Length: 303
Image 1: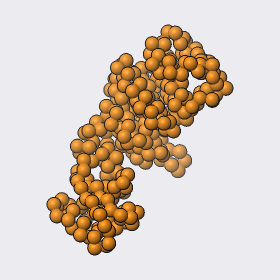
Image 2 (image 1 turned 180 degrees about the vertical axis):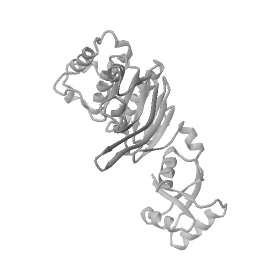
Image 3 (image 1 turned 90 degrees about the horizontal axis):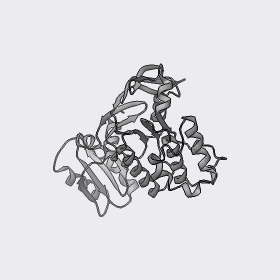
Image 4 (image 1 turned 60 degrees about the vertical axis):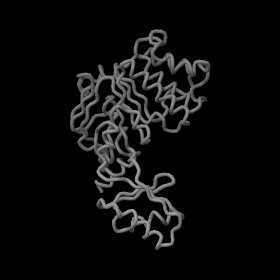
């Protein structure tokens, strides 16, 4: 469905994308995972024909993003990170406007958006600017789908909305996938990566890896250990000073560490080291890596 080859983009002194290559299959939920400033939005804007790449090529359903931009615009839905609908128009007016742009009607494709739009339809006469964050996202998603696109691009759709709305939105995406719509979604939230069929981890405009979420976890080269004790802020610094520590990052109530080499005695050595420094209640245990552990490991390996 989507093939991207060696796409690069620079904004003056900032290299936003550096030789991006990836492919997305038909009916797939493909995640672009990375922090703010990684290049996710720039890639979305290139693939939706809003801006031109400096170099490289990309096709969507066989259509070239430069030469066939009109066909692509007719067949993609794009939901940008910021709410960009008309805030002084009502919910229904916004949806009807977008349907008209694509020469269709709300009634014609209502079956596709029913599960989403029915949740905000009781407020169809309310100004879009007066909606809550979750309701704005549902309206924006309905507008992006009203012409029944082949591909749906969602740029950080769950940023700034409550956990319940996040869960609802991902349930909606799974249903849209069952309708045969290809979905490309970007997010800074690592837990959302697990809801995608495949993901590309991106940092500073470069793809670090592409695989299924479990595939990336299975490739984690080191064992991960969780460490906890009193005075966690000081503990972080002291763990990094331990001579056998490879990486150390904070994850909730634990610090996650990897060692430079595999030795079953290292945990005992670290515990003795921390107790010698005066730490009480030291807890060290091996854990299964998370997708966030994998992202941090890939990032550290490139520094």
